[in-house]
Length: 171
Image (tube, rainbow, N blue to C red; front, side):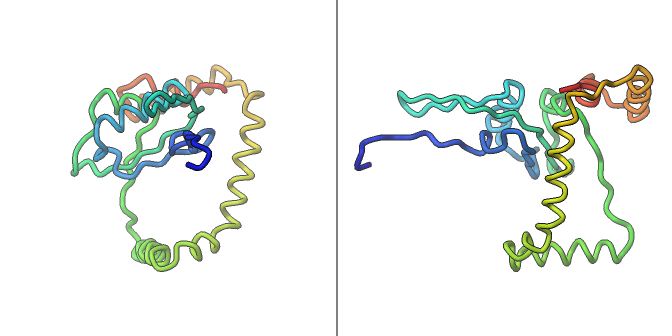
């Protein structure tokens, strides 16, 4: 304010650039918010306008959404934008379910401590993803793998062609 300068800072979509953007209960988002997220994902950038000021931010991310279909479905045009859809059944074993509960409670009680507890595992995963990103340009998908992937998609009865595009695309 003293310098009479206004800066447009990056938002959540720009911060998700080259990462995952996880949205819990994506089916409960306002339609215009969902549309903005999907537009940014499709274009690889997000456009911010505040009065006369504008700025473009890169926003290339992998969108991961979760939802409970009993609380409302996604619109078909949005559902089609996801390359992979998975129904995750609840855990059947009581000890596993208890562990999920305990971890959720531990996070609620001490988020920073919880993150610190799993920081080593997270760092290892981060390193593996970084190595995979470097190797990806050299990966070529042979025809037999394409055929296998298509067979999996058909066996799962995925109605969209986006599954093939997302599963087989080379970056």
